[in-house]
Length: 85
Image (cartoon, rainbow, N blue to C red; front, side, top):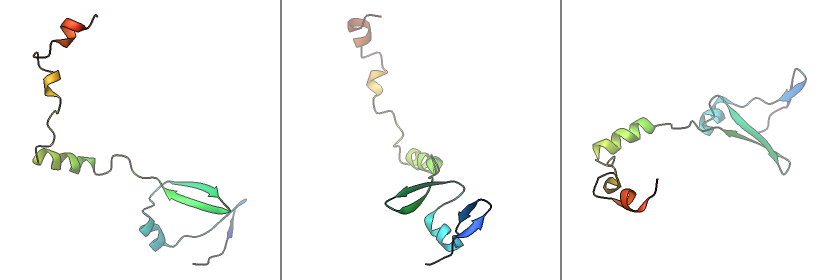
């Protein structure tokens, strides 16, 4: 796509069509950098996006159990016998 660079105050800018914004996944903030005579605009991913749904799915599949349960049980006496506090 070819577009014009326009004056915006003391800066210059371009208009990005809505369809391109939608396809890119860009929401509120972007990261901009220059590299090899190119301007790169990257969307900033939302941290922890969809975590709640993933945790619910884990619970349904019983995948949210503690894997190292033995270390919490009193069966492991390493702390009392080997470790000096």
